[in-house]
Length: 222
Ligand SMILES: Nc1ncnc2c1ncn2[C@@H]1O[C@H](COP(=O)(O)OP(=O)(O)OP(=O)(O)O)[C@@H](O)[C@H]1O
Image 1: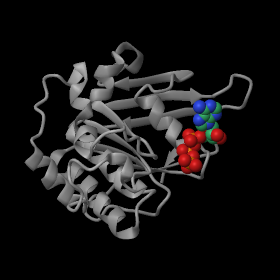
Image 2: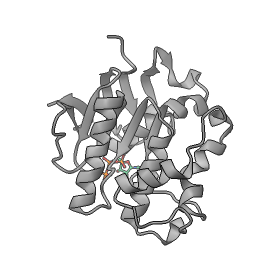
Image 3: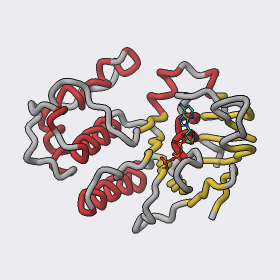
Image 4: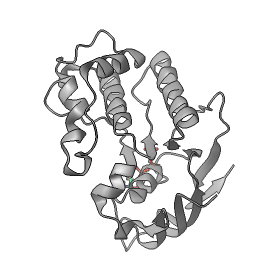
């Protein structure tokens, strides 16, 4: 199967005068893969995800998405297909509904059908947020609730690849298990490609993930 994403001899430093954060990183990701990336704090896991969706320019090597270098793909087109979810949820000043539907207002998403309230309510229920009305102000939600709304917002966009950066860092055990189950369902039943950075020793139940460790500036498969 041809690769969806390839990292070839990737190297990166935030500052040209300091040691590289990582060097000669090589990785092939195929459609439907489930990758877990582990590594100590500060080794560059979040940075690696940001490079893939071009939120940060890389220094050396190449990143290809469907055979094209990421620099040759317009950012909006790339991020519609490769979606990055941040560790800390970013909610805008507005209702839960407005936050969930915000990306549908982007020019690049104009052709996507806006989900009706019933679908949004069903999804809130799936995420254990059934007691939150769609008109509730999103900034009044707890961080854990905001993290779930941010995850819902990402999933509603139906990207081909989701790069999850610590998707459960603000969640209690029960909510974290539920979020992991939803991510597994997206991968198994909808063939969504998942790349997840996580500190926890989480392992999917019915999926065999490819587990990688970012350590000593290299990415190696465990
Ligand atoms: N915008 C930036 N400018 C300069 N240095 C940065 C920037 N963002 C991150 N760093 C540094 O790069 C290193 C890697 O950060 P990154 O967040 O990618 O690591 P991480 O492995 O995801 O860490 P954690 O597990 O704690 O989230 C850290 O030392 C961090 O301080």
